[in-house]
Length: 384
Figure 1 (cartoon, rainbow, N blue to C red):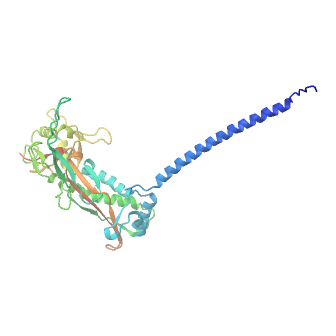
Figure 2 (cartoon, helix red, strand yellow):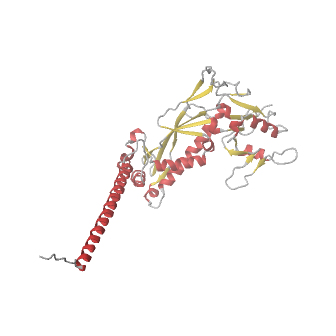
Figure 3 (spheres, rainbow, N blue to C red):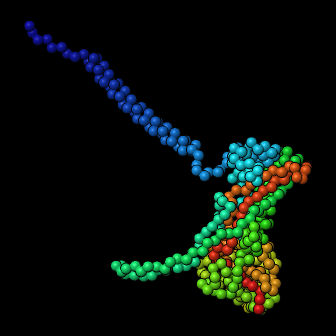
């Protein structure tokens, strides 16, 4: 029987090739889809992780949302509803009022910085307790030079002093009529922050300058003073320079001011400023050098402070006037030299009963202050 050779059908071959192409394409598409699914699953897992982290409460986080602030303002401040604020801070009126939400406390802090001149230039620390203590090194940490392989001699034992700023409860008691509170257009939040800041700033200004230290901060003018230079005076004693005249500035006040500036070490002069009241500033602005140039120079750019002998001038109305035995001018780096310690929450107690028909908002905050580094502040005293 003869061998019969059959020739493949061209159409069958074409169909087979087409089928192979379709299968290959399907495999490729499925591989791409699988890769995309894997990428989507990975992105989804990352988003879920971020979402869980965002919803997890942060330890010590006291921030309040806009809804909570609105509940505090409209619920407690306007209508006296305590349920709106218990969920925020858990405090009760018997504790002395409710801690205001952080957003309102931040508004009060911003206003205080603008109103209170000494606060604006001093070191401010927030505390969680009524007392605050800080250890300050007063020397003893010796240093030296040795060769690479030489023994290192023992350094001197460092000396420390403890700073515990005297503190007291600062309070304000602004009042509003019920009609004001019932007015939905009345910005109660800003009004309360401004009123509290104004009263706090007025009381702070006097305490940080000349406070007695008894149930209030100790002012830097109430610290011990001496003429001895740095390194000789006792810790906490502020150096002063005499004016040269028992009743005012002498015939060469520019020289005394230069002496005052350079009695401060160079490390503290970076960031130092003059502090005086407006009456003293009026007298200082009239001072001229021997060639007729004014010692005082106005700020050349908006927002820049006025300067005296190249240093900014801060007006603090609680500084004393020029008078015999007074300290009308201070010069120093107050961020190094004066410490303000305050409890980190302002408390507000709504009082609609004491002075009807007005509603009072009794606000309290614990604030302390004391000279931190007596080498960083120098005083000019009116004396011969």
